[in-house]
Each structure stands twice: as structure tokens, then as C-alpha cells.
Length: 103
Image 1 (cartoon, rainbow, N blue to C red):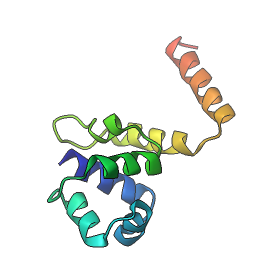
Image 2: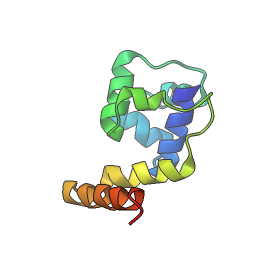
Image 3: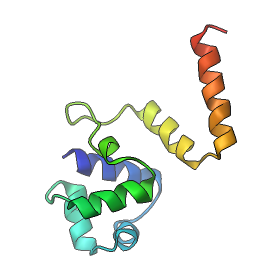
Image 4: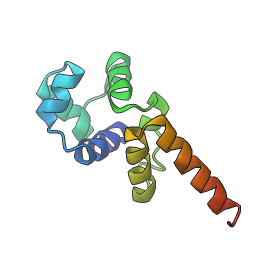
């Protein structure tokens, strides 16, 4: 179920259709729909394609707590960070460090 939750969350965040995602993964739309609904289990090959396509490691796909949705604020932060250039990521990291130090 965690894979389905992950796929649903990322699909909507990236505004992709099931057909578009299936094409990018080189699988049928029907197979992808089963994955997204939780009725199918992805192969290791498909999991690797998903992680590569979305820029996350395979572990992140399974990282929700107790099958619940990932914190939406953290989700939005991570989605935006994936789109940033390296220098922007460093700026964000420095800002987080400053906030954590209380400054």
C-alpha cells in the first residue's frame, strides 16, 4: 500500500496522468493503475525506474509511517528541492541551519 500512496502523491504533485507515468516507466497503463491502486506489486526493475524517474531512492518509496501519508509540508519541501539547482539546495541548507541555531 505504501507504494500506491507514494505513486498517488507524486503523480498528483507532478500533474502527470496514469498514461504519462506508464509511458515513462515503459509499462502498460493497466499495470500502472494496479500499482497506484495498491492491487499490484511492482517488480524490482519497476521500483528502480520509479526511483530514477522521480529522483528519490527506493527506500523513500516505502518511508511513510504506518501506511499514512507523508507529512504534506515535508512532501512539498522535498518536491521543490528535487527541482532545485545545487547552489539553491546549498542556500536552503544554510537557511535551515541558521533557523535551527535560533538565528
